Length: 116
Length: 116
Image (cartoon, rainbow over all chains, first blue to last red; front, side, top):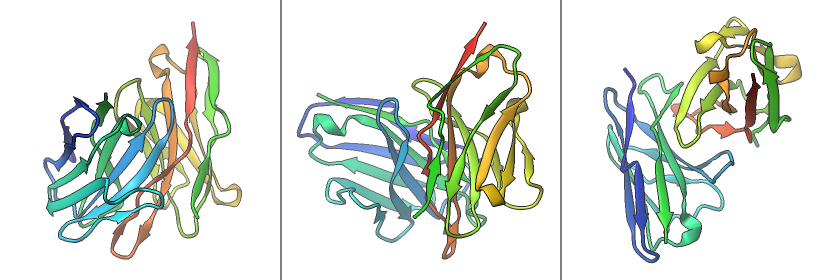
């Protein structure tokens, strides 16, 4: 149990377009989901915390208008990269905290975004 | 603010030799500590976690880690490494605030190289 999926696994888009990434908890409910970003050969950086039914909380330095997060249900959170530019190219990973324990996060496999 | 330090960027170990990866953390409350492994282009796999209780925790693939509060450390060990252990290893710290889990803070990672 405790499986998290992400879709798509890879996406290539042109500069200026928007890209949506889905994160789903397949076999549990997740009140809280998290979005991380990982640049090549670097560590993961927390971008935002997503709570079902409320606005996401963004980390300092993360542009909320550029990275739109929606957590519409207990099993789905989406990250939309708006007006993507080459510097947004990265590996985006989501995780979900299993409710009601909320102690451990289960990570998705990640989405590789390349902006041309 | 919370932080994680992994002082070794690269470590080279001979196959069959023992391994210790260092991790020091800073966290204002009771920490939850994690070790993850990541192969190139892949997502994260949880090796082990510490929430409370016995300070020596056993994980998958023969890994173990010891929580030392006095030293703010959570070092990862394995008595005998295998070539398949070559990967990137991340230490992470989190906790709980309010009603649920906090986003994790990751160290910069240690790249493990296995020599035949």
